[in-house]
Amino acid sequence: MISAFEENELLDLMSDVELLLKYRNYAAASARLQEIMEEHPDYLPAKEALQEVYRMTGQGKRAQDLEKEVRALSDERAKTQLSPVAKEEYAKIERRQFAEKVDGLIRIIYHGQTLEDTFEATAAEILNLLKADRCLLIFADNARQGLNDLEFCAKDVDSCLNEGTSEMLQHWFRENPSFDSPVVSCSSQRDPGLAQFRELLVSSQVHTMMGYPLIYKSRSVGWLVIQQCVPYYSWSESDLTLFSVACGHLATAFENLRSFTELQDLAFKDSLTGLNNRHFLKERLGVELSNAQRLHYPLSLAILDVDHFKRINDTYGHPAGDIVLRKLGLLLKNNVRKGTVVARWGGEEFLAVFPNMELSIAALIVERFRDKVASAIRVEERVVTISAGLAQVRWDHSSSLEDIQARLIEEADQNLYTAKRDGRNRVHWQPVTPENEALNVPPVPAAQPSPSLSLPF
Image (cartoon, rainbow, N blue to C red; front, side):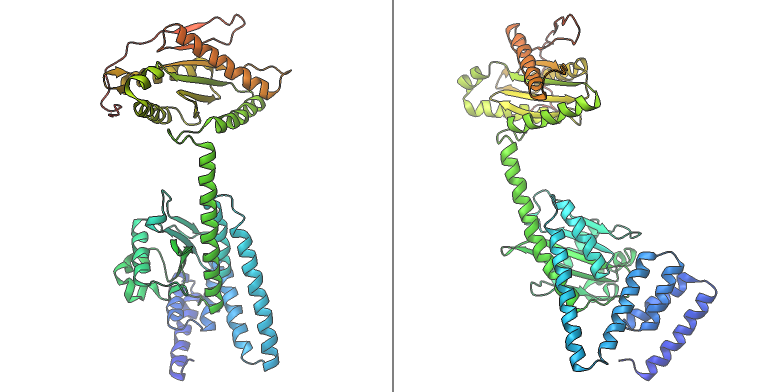
């Protein structure tokens, strides 16, 4: 409740604002109104004046949010004048509206197919419902598992997610552990608990923050935080409840997505090398062939095989053979151009798909890789080498894509067999010409191990 003295003081301040607006000094008027609202968050004349400033300066989103706040505050005051019966009816309407908001938000949360998509869609809806400007997801260290913190900003709001912001929020979480209700900092730039971060809060225009932990089966996944960049909206108990409900479902949705991703990895990843496996490669190759056929571009394929791999296992043991395969997988993953699909095909064989690439270029890349393997991988004093067979897709409009794929793999495999028969440590392929003349790429003498590439046992 505003006292008579405060009312008189506010009238003087609003008179100053009117003069500033008269002379179109919108920046000064906005700053003065924000100061008034920080001291008196429910002072309607200041809210209405600031709403007009936002309209005049093209800040449509903030003007709309403030209009909702003015309407909500006006409705709240009007409710105090209602009869007991009318208040009860109004409460029923509010409960129904709240349930509809929660239902809509939950549908959005569980609709996403990836963690990033789920966060972005949920954050956009939360900012709309709670009249906020930023939403940040800060992962707990023990749940991060290579994930980066995420941020979603409303239109015309600058990003603030950096190391300084993460440090500030982690400090805020530690100082305000709460699992019953969201933590709220109503005047963040004046919050004594955040005094050491005041410069950061001012530069990021953070006036109000609300955060709540994402808990899944008693384990903290992280924190969800929303921020307001203008000091005009006071979150109600209903808003706090909506935010905490959203956080509970978001934690569950994230863990479901993470579990699904892990299952996908088990289904499509080779456990020894970390590369994609044969099943994934066959599915992906089918897609790449379809794209190549539709867009009329070439596609090349290589099958690579470790020379004398059985001899390595017999001489040095299977653990040594596993190390060779892991190193080869790592080299292959790190030495192919973006867009190339690589996989462990089975045993000591690896397969690489080169979309939109002529066979001669793919052969050059594989030849350089063959040379790199001979320089980088050894078992004690033994140099490890590979052989490779390549092929380029040959279109036959009378055949299905499945048959074309099978022939492509068979041709590459036959060329690998030729490379093995002709002495190993070489690349073999047949140019796509009417004559189909074979071309052998002769082996290059093995170089000494390179320090930068050598992977010691």
